[in-house]
Image (cartoon, rainbow, N blue to C red; front, side, top):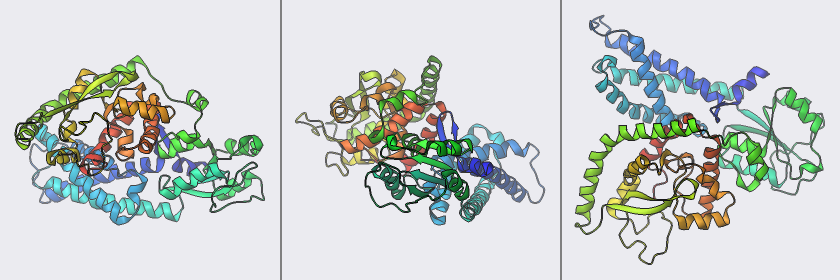
Length: 472
């Protein structure tokens, strides 16, 4: 039983939870990519005419596998929604392969010793695609046949348990098997649950028989009586027992504000900050900035010229706006102008909307590709922003949101970023409701920040940019 649970549970790396199933899948796929490269080598040099300076194969295969696997991560290939259908999965893998060809070409240009040979990389990519699709189909079949999805038992069948049911039905908790809801004393009447379980045996017996992996406490009133001894028996038998907030944090990557109390914030793990971590993050920002600026400057020059021509030299190229940074400090953010100059001529701050009429023709293209945000590289250089963090908001919106949303100012505990956890998990925020939803992801980032989650966010930002997610 313990082995099965190890496979099903999330594994925590540097404060961030990753489903163990995807760690195992990633290991198998890394091996498949190595094998694909060796197969391509054998086919490319089938006649035995190996170049004299070809060198060892394994380092070349390692570089190939690492880059392609990072492309899979960037295209959300290791998220539960990417496994919905075989067609969806195959398209995502194909897109990852195409995306991976770009960094592969750059690496081969800078380090020719890793080059496989003319046509060899294309063969390796084709083999890699076939082996990964086969691996995923096989993996999914095993998962379905043996029911390896995480089995969750919810203690509670009232209003609080509605949160679990709604999130599961909406797909937010996809990949989990909600075995049932057990009514608890004090539960208020909620939505009809499916299924509601009236246990006629001790909880530990049901848990072992149904092979439950996690028990989630979702009773409306815990003071009316939880089965404390039964829960202790389950915990000592290796079953996870989670409060609702921790459950959502682990499985959905967010901190639910509608059920949070201050004690959970200061008693839970996380919110760690050290001088070493801040220095490491700043060093990473500077290094990445200096690496990207030589590539970005020519693009920025072209955009500037096109912007001037598009406005008949009547409008400024750059747009400056006051935003809120770390600890509530105000700073000036730089962007390429994407709206007409009279977008807020009455002085009233407005949210950007879908198909906003204030956006210019060029601005629509720049926003779709996120190119309007390139000048923010200088904000990162100045230290006003980081590459990863909550998106900075205007002071007017911050005042409005902080007045209506509890804990809103906690997102200002870290520097704002060009991209962030909320940006890859949620669409563009254009209302107070969106602000509340994004804050829940921002608080998860603030609580669980590490260099690992920064790298993960940067990689997955590629999908947001390439697919134009949330662009207004």
